[in-house]
Image (cartoon, rainbow, N blue to C red; front, side, top):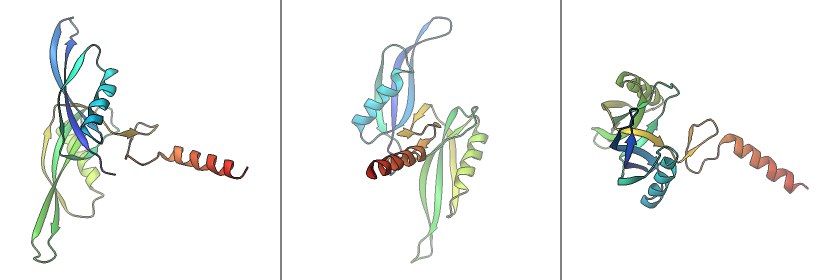
Length: 175
């Protein structure tokens, strides 16, 4: 199942280290099935992170199609990449390019490019990184995460759960 990414712009009053209050606006990316669910998930996810009142100033569908996360703890920034998937038209033989947008974790633009290239190395079709730019996205909330904290596609069951559920059903069936 394909992810439906939404960008939520959140506004709230943040207290700095020196005790001064400052109005801030932050952007978050989250996976949801609809605008209504996106709004609910935004509130649910940020309730624990933001102390005090906040409100959703904007909510829009994102053109991000893929998320490239990193296991490196230093990769705390998000970069948006435009990648051209190159294919040949079977009838005319002309080159066709289809653009996809990736959100890539990285500490620097170089680290993000390395993470993106590593992720794209499994593609069997030719591709080209058209652009890579820093974003204002603070955090990303995939639809599901497994016990190790890795994203799981909607509809998939983490391996541990599926094996436990299968065994439980088998035992009850044979009693």
